[in-house]
View 1 (cartoon, one colour):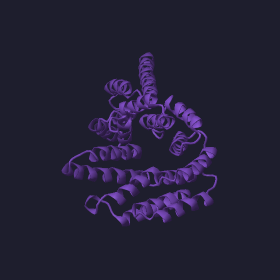
View 2 (cartoon, one colour; view 1 turned 180 degrees about the horizontal axis):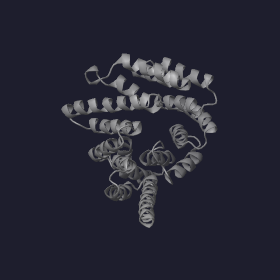
View 3 (cartoon, one colour; view 1 turned 60 degrees about the vertical axis):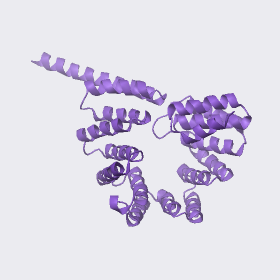
View 4 (tube, one colour; view 1 turned 30 degrees about the vertical axis):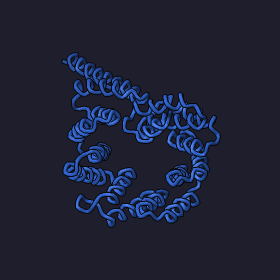
Length: 320
């Protein structure tokens, strides 16, 4: 009997190890931007391990990168069925429904929006101190009409909750409200205050840099971005922001190109810049140098990753 039990345990261990190796291979493909290969491998893993919620989650992320919105939602629905108390899966399911809603007809979008807020609020109930969940809810409450669960009062409550959970995030939460109301000076004042109150937090400087970049204050964005990068040199999102500011200003293009080339070499995972955005800025830098052939190639690469990338489309159309 003991030998039978040992054999069973060995078989189970081997199966778990094989699934783990498969997941690592899939993640390697994903990090290199090889989303179809990642999806194919993860689909095979889902068939052999149908109750592995993490495999379903990773497969959903690959479908999202491939712009296969319904498949992404379906896989996350399965992950939530397997692990109904996993806040992360509920958060990403809400985001997946949001991706669908943004491309749906009105009646479908209405139904999907209700699903978005349901999943976000479920995630909050399961993980009330999760800042990502709180910020997604803040954005939803600000943008959605009351008939599908939006509302200014709810948004303000999220701002208060964020400030209590992480005081260093209070400013960006407040700025989100101001930006929605187009109160630009108040937004920048709040973000500047955060850099004074939390000078050693890279995120405070990065939040200010992102705001300034969006307002086309590229010099201010570069200054704040460099401070953030000095505090967190490994941040790929900050590296892209700094490179983008340099390209927009037409300064330090050699340094920008080195940074962009490093990003394009990967790996890039969730939380990092997208490959399409990196290649777009490679193209923009090439245009700034007058290298149309290289710019065209970079914009085409960006569009292979995301055929809906509007700025890459527009830039490509401008090249004779």
